[in-house]
Amino acid sequence: MSAERLQTLTSWHADWKGLRVAVLGLSMTGFSVADTLAELGADVLVLSESAEEEYARLLPIIGARLELGSLADIPEALVDFDPELVIASPGFSPTHPVIRWTQESDIALWGDIELAWRLRDKVVRDDGSPADWVLITGTNGKTTTTQLTATLLAAGGLRAAPCGNIGVPVLDAVRDPAGFDVLVVELSSHQLWYLGQSDAEGELFPHTSVCLNLADDHLVWHGSAQAYRDAKALVYRNTRVACVYNKADEATRRMVEDAEVVDGARAIGFDLGIPGPSDLGIVEGLLVDRAFLDDRSRSALELTTLADLDRVGLAAPHIVQNILAASALARSLGVEPEAIHSALQDFRLDAHRIQIIARHRGITWVDDSKATNPHAAASSLRAYPGAVWVVGGDLKGVDLSDLVADAGRTASAAVVIGVERVEVVTAFRRHAPGVPVFEVDAGDTGQVMNRVVEIAAGIVDGEGTVLLAPAAASFDQFSSYADRGRRFAEAVREWIDRGSDDDAGGPPSGI
Image 1 (cartoon, rainbow, N blue to C red):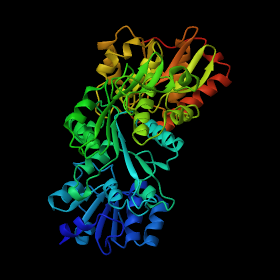
Image 2: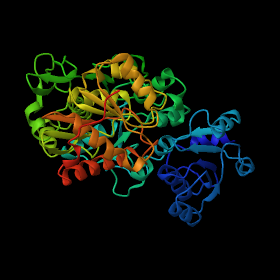
Image 3: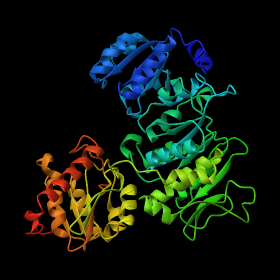
Image 4: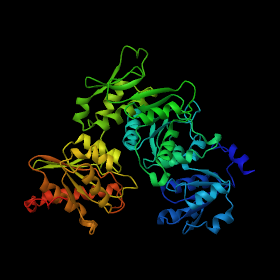
């Protein structure tokens, strides 16, 4: 009866009582799942290899049980529990032993996004309908575009909640008693993979969706580039109004062409060129909409200007692309161009996203620690040609050869960090031998960024830019990309406070 029962669970008001649910992982997402299910009266067992003290303390209070320990083997507690449903936190890969056991045991497997979709009618709008969902994914730019979209929707008078991979669980937004008109949901490829395990009852029907771009990333988790691409493409499935795609990224166009969507859904393109009749783009320094107006074959609506964006630090090409994508999403929900223009004048990027830390003695120090893969780093390098490039870290199985051969050869020098420095240095020797390369030993991780700053300051002759755009994850030496960026900024400030007297000798010899 489990499968038949699960098919009926498509509403907050359905009968969830007594349903045996195993929740994998006790991060922010895992706790939101357990808390929601406990509120619904389900029988909840949480399994996790570790747990924050606060979450572990709260679980018994809300009525859920916790089993801590290794998940490399199938825990007896899980087998004895005999779950009817397993809901996994997005960190659990398709090859994880518990995920494989779940699938081989023919137990339903969901992610938190599917659960949230099924429960989306907990709080409804005045007309009795739940909030519309806007889905955002892509290798890079997801969080910025999610924030931009929510900001533009709010400027248009809509109650919008940015949630999902951005850091606020979708279940928390669904359960917010204030209610929303639109949920702007950032989705990682991991969350999208879990949506691909859904049956018909669990499929999402978003109002509008976008894949911003596609480049190799998370290949170890997915197993292949094709599997990663297939997961990303799920963002367009069942879209009702508009599938927004990047005209400069052929992969996103093909995703839209291949997607099964609701009849009437439109394909809306964006890029930095002159837009066609169903696109957003740029004409003589103006960002314009030729998609969401009646006379789109002969006219366009001005959204903002590159000059206005430059004044507020939003003119980097990849950020302009994000703005065009977010504007398309907002326009699909009726936000007027005037509201978009006004909102962009007050929008600011988060820390560690092409953030100018300081300008001192002719050197501009830029923190783009969030550039954790080659695609993101390439965008940063195009925004700052000729920079001293700080690169390296946990490569996640990704080869940097193409990045170095393309954007990397425009750097004036490279300062290589991380435990996988050999791979990075080798890429420069093979593909950009004219770029001077300097290594920072990984021995004392607490001093990595101080050494980076000393070397980079010695390289710059006169005026120049030092760009932290690692093209790699941070966990080999830092607790997060934010920690990496923070330590970089602290090292820059220490160098400035010292009066930069101790860098007079210049950097060591390049490789």
